[in-house]
Amino acid sequence: AQSVSQHNHHVILSEAASLELGCNYSYGGTVNLFWYVQYPGQHLQLLLKYFSGDPLVKGIKGFEAEFIKSKFSFNLRKPSVQWSDTAEYFCAVNKKSSGDKLTFGTGTRLAVRP
Amino acid sequence: DTEVTQTPKHLVMGMTNKKSLKCEQHMGHRAMYWYKQKAKKPPELMFVYSYEKLSINESVPSRFSPECPNSSLLNLHLHALQPEDSALYLCASSRQGFVAVTDTQYFGPGTRLTVL
Image (cartoon, rainbow over all chains, first blue to last red; front, side, top):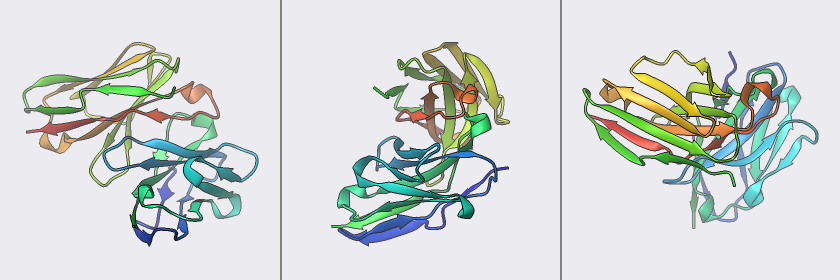
């Protein structure tokens, strides 16, 4: 069965610091990759996604992620975080052959100090 | 427009009650999903409907009964729940589901359920 690992459970940063959140998946086949964000009290929102093509994907709010196939990774980055980025971030994966079954990582709770 | 709506926002019910959660989308999506999210945990898939037919049931107890009356609506009927079923129940939709090799799920705000 596929699984998704997010090794950083809690991250605390000061504003303007750079962010990198790790995501690794176990499935060896062709996958689609997603990052979702859940702001306090709000619903899950799509930050960015990778289906194919350029492995460096740009999303909303200045976030980007890089797909490294050889490392089974899809790390999320942002050069300079803001207080408003405080949220929980989930990496998610599904197999291209079964596009409906989305598996989420355990999430990373990010707190940005003003 | 990528809006999925869910009602009610909050629900408190006793273990002998029968209640229903409702989810609606008007994006023309043909796949709809129910997830359960416990506090500080990721969402866990419960059910998938694709073209109004149940395509995935992740071994969910029968006290949860999904229903898809049409392509825009998804219900989750609840009966004889346990306190451990208290969680945030999320609905999502996507354009095609399993028939597509690339598809994106859009989530509603959820219903926060408390079982007493």
